[in-house]
Length: 315
Image (cartoon, rainbow, N blue to C red; front, side, top):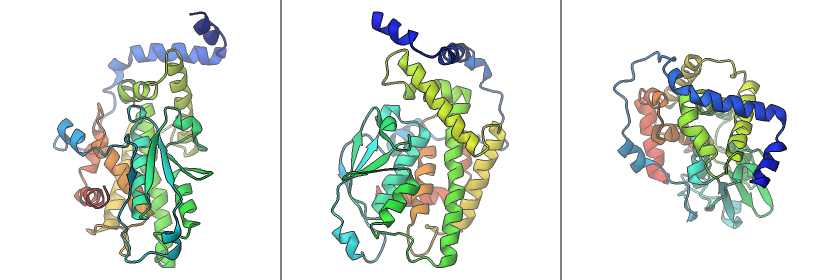
């Protein structure tokens, strides 16, 4: 008890004030969860708890996995790369929506590159990450975080899923990768800014491995980081209806790009396929107290078909 009192005494006054406000806010969250209305009918697109538990891809088991290559041939450097890849993840009980999506996107990308990897769980994985995000990969003495940096790192090993694209197609790839980042922004927004989801999911998962009051302090710090990230993209002042509009618009653009095909480019799977799969699959099969994101995705059957194809082929 003396140690706890000492630790609490050392907390900065502003943080203590925020902690008190957070407790007061949580107590009145239940009365504020029905203020936002959807723009479209979502009654026919509910996803069952049984389906979620059956289809959710586990990220918690330490194992070596190898994904089949979607290319007809392998480069010599691909065959020569024998470095061990370790994917560092949070504990599964800690992982919130966009972290699960990032994990799936990175795993799908490695599988598409036909690279084996090992999953390692750490409670403090986010604190170990060079970008404060999870998962990140470790290859010998190199630590790389964020999907785009991992893609660049793998390309430096002469393994490039998009190397056969034309110049114009590479421009399209970069444009759609930037567009797909909207999916991540939406996920971050609903996890930290939707009061019901924050109360019932985000704060509980984020603080699950820490004792009180560290669980509250750590969650407040992560919430501030999320708000700063949203602000950097000018999303911090958006309403929920505006965020959902961006989500629907992004899904529609990706759906039209597929145009009935099972891949975004005819040459085979690229980093875009891995990124979109990770985010859409996480949305579809993450249990949430509100299912509005699921309901939007369910409105695009071509995207559902795409997600099922990648899951079947690589997982």
